[in-house]
Image 1: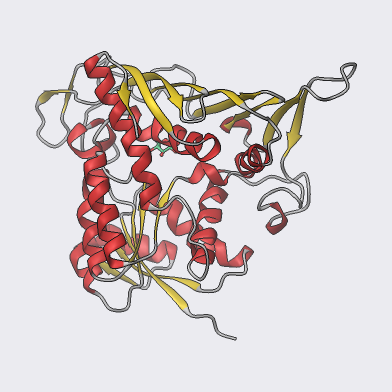
Image 2: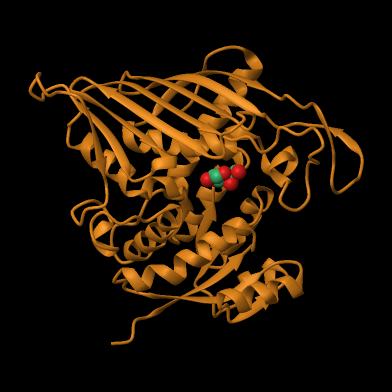
Length: 378
Ligand code: SOE
């Protein structure tokens, strides 16, 4: 039987345009989906490069203005993989045109932008999702199942870090291709919206809402040449951020992120300590879930290193035989598959409304870094 198509219009062909395209191509080959994704059109300003991208990934056509893409009646889903300053306008227009909308994280540059996007998709009643991909690494999904199952009991502590080192050079310009994450007007914030947003999304999924935060940020390089103007301009983003918080369930949070941790490229780690046990996960060893269960026999009690590749682990029955690995890209594939499966049943998370909660926390973190006070985060 031929499946109904899900005709995708992708905006953006950078790093995220590639991860999303790969996810839509791969998902139907490994998951039995109720609709068949079709890469119908790619949209980017540079026609030649968009055409090369279309050819490489199998897009059927090219647009150079996202408004033309949104106006097309042969597109069901607009997927936004463009820089953050474009998310809101495209998402609202897409929702108003009755399209489903997927958006790269963070949803908006601020919670105020994200709120407008939530209002638009809810008013239009269209399916929506934000690409917080790390939830769908099998070891992280297993952690969620264990926490929901009560395996850790009452939770006392949650701590997460996301460390990188790619902006240390003072010669790196801000703005322009590949470097818009350094330009506050485009990105909205630095590591807080770019990296801590991932940590916060996972944390709230695993451990519930965050009520209040107190934070510090630093911008180590205060001025950089702007790639678009050629002038040296003040840097507005936070290069590093650390914050403490209180979850609604009474547990305590500590989070840290920086792009100035020499030697770390994408070190995302999280640890949860509960009454019965603890869990630890590290993106650099993404199949491992370290688990300590205090209820084990005292003579052999210790940290277990669970290799999350068995058929009864989340998602893993769709892949290879036990023991063989999948990676970063498959977290996007899982997300695409879950989104499509959710279209005819329970919508898959995180929806725009879920991602708005993350943006409320990141806003509160940045507010607190300015005010020096605890700030409400929900
Ligand atoms: C920044 O370097 C970045 O690419 C983020 O934008 C992604 O969201 C993160 O997953 C990896 O790091």
